[in-house]
Each structure stands twice: as C-alpha cells, then as structure tokens.
Image (cartoon, rainbow, N blue to C red; front, side):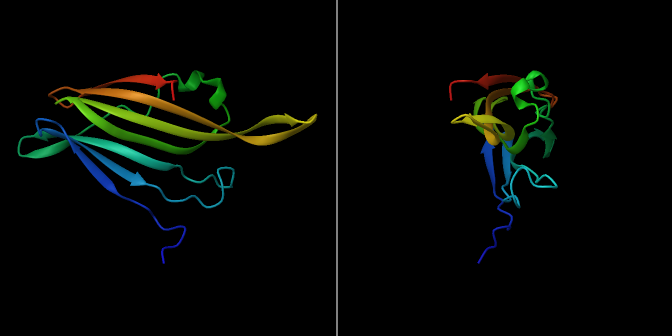
Length: 152
C-alpha cells in the first residue's frame, strides 16, 4: 500500500512539429503534511515545464523566464496568501518555435468573515490562471508573453 506521503511523480513530453524542440512536463504532487498554514510551511505542489532544443548532436535546455510573474508584486489580493500549488504545463506548439503554456496558481489566506453578525477569520481561496506564449530563438533565448485569464 502506498502511504499518503508517498511522492507522486510522472513526466510527459510534447514534441514540436519539426522535432527540433520538446517540452518536458514533470510533476511533484507530494501531498503536504498538515495544511497550508502548518509550521513550517509545506512546499507547494508543482508541475513544471522545461524546454529543450537541438544543439549539434544533442539537446540543450532553453531557459524560460517563468519565475517572475508580471503584476504579482502589485496584486494586493495575494498579500499574505500562501501558495498551495503552481502548475505550469505545455498546451501545444503553435509553430515549431512557439510554445503555448498554461499556469495555474492556487493560494489560501486568512481573512475576515462575518456571518449572522459574528466576525471571525476564515480561509479564503484564490487562484490565478495564465496563458503564456514562449517564442524560442535559434540561439536558445526565449521571450515570454503572459496573459492573465479572467474568464475561467
């Protein structure tokens, strides 16, 4: 029997139409011990995408600038929120050098709530969903365009 704390990991590959690049999706969906407010904070669950491109007789990794989400620092709603999961997944190759990705972030934070005149702190869930277009140059440099999806 697999314990509740067992690491759940898998990987998938999405090849570009010309087979000169591929997106590699890896998962670390280790269930956190406790909850997001436990001490110490649990590591968020992650799905991460790495892209590789032909370079001579092998493949080299393309550095995708995905760590700095535009607008996050000014997103007041996320102040004090705790990241529960961050999934960055490839969707499809739009062109041999243009990859469409989706990113879903799930957060929880404590906030004031009132019910029947009683005020208390409760857990509020927050999510952000982005479409990311990554364009990869022949030299392996990547440029990304982020779009916050509000229609989900």
